[in-house]
Image (cartoon, rainbow, N blue to C red; front, side):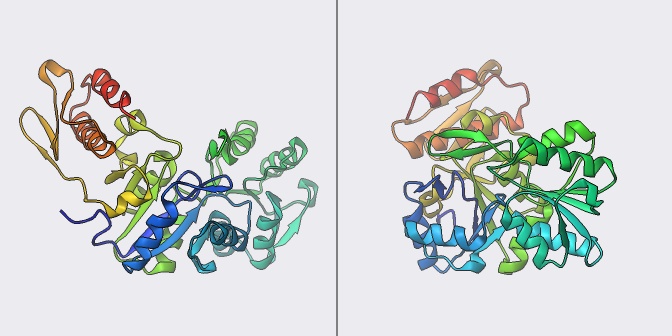
Amino acid sequence: MGALIDGHDVAMFDLDGVVYLGPEPVAGAVEGITALQVRGVRTVYVTNNAARPAQTVADQLRSMGFTVQLDDLVTSAQAAAGLMRRELPAGAKVLVAGTSNLVDHMTEAGFEVVASASDRPDAIVQGYDPDMTWRRLDEAAIAVQNGARWYACNTDSTRPTERGLVPGAGVAVQAVQVTTRTTPTVTGKPFRPLMEEAVRRTAAKNPIFVGDRLDTDIAGACTIGIDSCLVFTGVHGKQDLIEAPADRRPTSIAWDVPGLLLPARATNADAHGVRCRDAYVSAPEGVATVRGDLGDREGQLDALWALAQLVWARPGLQYAAALGDLNAVH
């Protein structure tokens, strides 16, 4: 069995929770991505975070030991600017509810950036900003109610850090949404603009997207029909995988980035259950049970992948005890 990465010409990575957590790289990420590059795989970083310039992110990655060029960064702010340039007239007035990076992208796209809903903006664009204030959200909500077209760079409800989860851009977007009863056009994952920009920029023939979130990373890959790999170093875990709806299911799993270089997981189903290498999950009387060596991480993931396939194929299957067996192994 070949490596999981075999056959893929481009590996696309989410950042938070996959490549780094706050100021620190995720364990093994530098070594794993370097090994992919040595194999000739193009590596790019696709992020929903519109707060920081791509150059700043590239500099941070280099300081951590990654080999990265500016064109290897694809951001939701870039995708928003591109989409708005296609949909709005040149010189349109835009109210920005985001950082100076998002302001710069709007200016570079040829728009007139305004500061208030009283300036009658044609559009508002919203992105993550750690210094967001209620007054700025007020202006955004009023502009939307006055008829401005509303764009959001992403709607992630949480953001992983080295200290734990914190509120993401989606919390601020939801505040405007609840107020206006309006839904924005979203450019970041899982929506098409950012994902399609990453494919276009890399000219990928058979890419794989590596992420820690089912609702953005994996769903985004499903949206444009490319392979995906869920890693367990960030937001979503084993139970999230088992409970994932069809449009949020990865085509593979790995513990972390170096897992892309390990043998791919294949499953075989029979009348009673599903096998993944030495792990076998069956469901006598509708209750899933796990057999196999769960003593190491790879064996644990084999069993998890078999369990996921069985649960997805048999809605209503009871799996709590089997998942408990997996959660007991670290």
